[in-house]
Image (cartoon, rainbow, N blue to C red):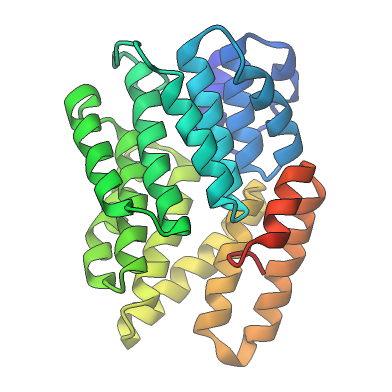
Length: 282
């Protein structure tokens, strides 16, 4: 079961059925929640993560809080996510940041998740995102080394910080590196999200070649994500395509809204409330 869940969370089967893991060990339940969140099954994921946030294992409790934070950001709830990432960091007080897992499911990985999450939260609430990212990157370098998952997440946030600062040229390198790292790791869900970040970067470069490349990436990923059931990645891709293709914008907007509506039907009440209040969600 552990290898099956790892492959679903961090490998080649992100659309896998993980319903049986709800009765598994705490670590299996956390892996299942990661998968469920990636599939947009937020209510089921939240039920597992809420329980795990109160487990006696501080590393697992931290991972649960930062995972729920990530899912709150996906519906535009950056302020709610910041509280959860703060909780994730607090749970690690006094814990030695040991790195002993290839997918960062350890104390060092939990620390990296919490700090990287706080940097991502700051983008949405106007905080010191760049400074927090530097702290996260230094911490990863010190305690975790160059492990794929922490590196990919850091590169996502670095690219998003540069885009938010109006510097897409500076976002290009981390966005491409995230794609390359996730691809080398065989992590399909991380690869398709990295491709979406790269497409957003290319869109903001405002030249014909970059626009064509962005469109090709997004068209491929919309189809791929729908097949895999990664609905939280479908609607942002559709929104980007609406921006890139004004003549067909209405159709892409309707597609984005339709997929998002399906996601929110499977979300917990808190996620639906956050989405309704967010300027990031159509």
